[in-house]
Image (cartoon, rainbow, N blue to C red):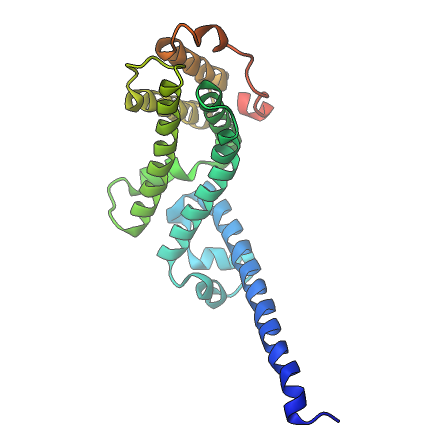
Length: 238
């Protein structure tokens, strides 16, 4: 029979393991809550999020949901961060693997368009959040605006790199081009989701090609009309 001293190391080892298992389970629970919160926010907006609604959807107690976030505001901010992380995984990081210049810029736009095509039925938190919090200062608005600015900065950097590589004319106003590209995405979301206008995806892509035809250098012009990347989901063409 082991003495207390002999059995102490085993007990000491078991405690950290139990703690690790509890921590892992807590992370899984939090991830499941965030997944449900993203679904609610996409359809109902960030203001539609509440601890009570989330508890009902996840079949948890209100206190259980509250324990993972502490407040409705922290829940909203966590959803914004999670949405941004997924946006980066789907749009930004894959495109960075493309060659500097027009190939990368094209891929960024195409992946952005594909992301919007999926959100035609679910909704975009960036866009709905901008409507909800455009005149409401506070931590939620700051978090949302910060994520959008980070994405815009990345896209503008891609434009500036395309200028440096000689794919875009040296006098190109990167901020203006960013404004025009973002405008195409906003118009696409409005016409495809709100008005349900057929062909909105094709018009967005055509608008991007027109912008490139204006800003591209003569050297880059012959290659700028390469065949488009894989088509968007059929439901997006409604």
